[in-house]
Structure formats: C-alpha cells, structure tokens
Length: 382
Ligand SMILES: [Fe+2]
Ligand SMILES: [Fe+2]
Image (cartoon, rainbow, N blue to C red; front, side, top):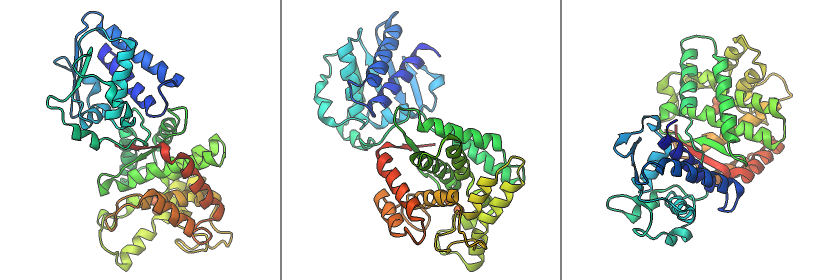
C-alpha cells in the first residue's frame, strides 16, 4: 500500500469510528492519531497535498490512485459536497481534529452543532467544492446510521455466481457460500458493538441475492441475540443465505412480475421451498439444517403457508427463526407490487401476527433484537 492509500484508508476508518463513538473514546483517539501520523509521513517530503474525489475515483495531486478505484468513501465525500481536500502546511493535532469533525458533520455522521468550529481559509486544511453548495449536505446519510468502511460488493458477486452455478445445474458451491457467511459475520463484528450490514435493493433482478444476504445477517443477529453459540449462529447464517435457493429455478418473468400471479405461476413460486431443499440434500456436504429451513421457511405457526407439513409438530425452531427474518426483509424492500415498509410498520406486523404466523417467543425475540440493534444498521451498497 502506498502512502496516499494508507492515509485515506486510515482517514475513512477514523470517520467510521467517529460515527460510532464520541471524540474522547479510546477507539476514536487511537484511529484519529494514526490518521494524523499517516498524514505527517505523507507531508514529510512536501507539506502541500491535494486530494480530489470524483465519482468512483481518487486523485492524489494529478495522479489517479489506482488502488482506490470504486472506493466507497470517494462517492460518500462527493455526495457530501467534498470533492477536494487540500493540506497547505503541517497540520496541528487540534486542527486535524476539527477538520475531521467538520467532515463528519458534512457526511451526516455527526450533528451540525460542531460545524461552526471550522474557519475556512485560515487553516492549514481546505476542503469542499469549487463552488461550495451548502444545500448538498442534506443529501448526506442520516446521523443515526452506523457505517462500515467497505462495501459487500465481492460477497454480492459471489452469491450471484453461486446462483448462476446452481441454475446451470452444478453442485452447490458450499465453500464459497460458507466464505460469504464468514465475511458477513466479520462485517457484523468489525466494530466493538454489533453492526447489521443490510443491503439496499437497487434493481429487482438483484432481489434474490440481496434478500438472501440480508436474511443471513438477520438470522445470525437473531441467533446471537438468543445466545445460541457460534456454531449454531453460523449454521443459521448459511441456512439464511440458502433459504431461497429454489428460487433460482423460477423463471425471471414470474420473479419480477409487477401484477398478480396466475394460479399456475403461483404453483411454480410455491414449489421453491421443495426445490431448494432437494438441492441442499443432494449436495455433497451435510446440509440438513439448511435443507430443513429451505423446506419450512414459508410454514406458519397455525399450519398456514406452504408446503403443508405432514408432521403435526410444525416447523423446526431454526425454520421459525429464518421465517421471521425472511418476512421482515421482504416487507422492508421495494417490490414490483408495493413500496418498502418502514421498520416500525414491519415490526408491528410481526407483533400482530405473533401466535398466528410466528411463534410468540420467536416474534418477541426478533422485535427485541431489532430494538437493541436498529441504530446499528449499516445501509450497504453492493
Ligand atoms: Fe422463500
Ligand atoms: Fe425469502
């Protein structure tokens, strides 16, 4: 990693940490100090530095920084009206702190109260647009959203590829599916407190991938909330990721159809739990739990839903856990036939359907989990 990359990466880590902790928190001071250290190293030969952020590109002076192509923070800074950062002279510790606070305000990860600390033009640091438009800051993300310093693009691409492999009739690439779950789990624990990295749907075609990853994250979070232990939590993550595997066999026209499904189309859709379970049982790895969850994730507590279980005991506990995560994520997402619901509305739905669709203990645990961590949701792009 060369020096501008080191500095900008540490800068973004500092901003990510500042979104979660106060200025005096040791996690903040540690990473802010290290960003300043990187900056000083970079300023050693020549204190005057200039960074330019364009859509998906970073320039150091007039050189494109190849390693940071598509860097998430570049678009975040641009969106917040920061297209350029210039360091004119050696930066003192307090100036650097104020500079970071101001950037954090711009990015919407700190309240605006600290904004007047910055004296433009008098300082060793300058930033903004050529024609600074104050209105731009309103486009920044809301203050209560947690941030992670990376995207889940690679993971999303891997899940897409897993689905394509299955559509081709290949075996389920379990190593890759496991790797995605591990990576989601790492993202959830990248900070001192839990973060729920949930993807936002951009195109309907992406629905099955985005939804599978979100259900995996929610199922692991619910498992952790219930203190089920590492191995079970990971197994729930895999089951969540693969619960809709059978959907890869549903024709695209049906999946993205905006209107009501015909009876024959509904039959095709309702087969996806059976198709998915069959695929998982046929895989070389022992995938019993994921197969059971795939089979039962649309089964309701009162016996409604599909498929109809022959066994009167009802769905397994793991299936009930994934079911509630499945419904929550589906309600929170824009679909061809309706707008996404707000989190509160989705939770109210789950509460209302407790004892009918959802096991009361499971519904209560899910609502409790979301109440504990709803401010720890990181809206991810991929
Ligand atoms: Fe499903
Ligand atoms: Fe689903």
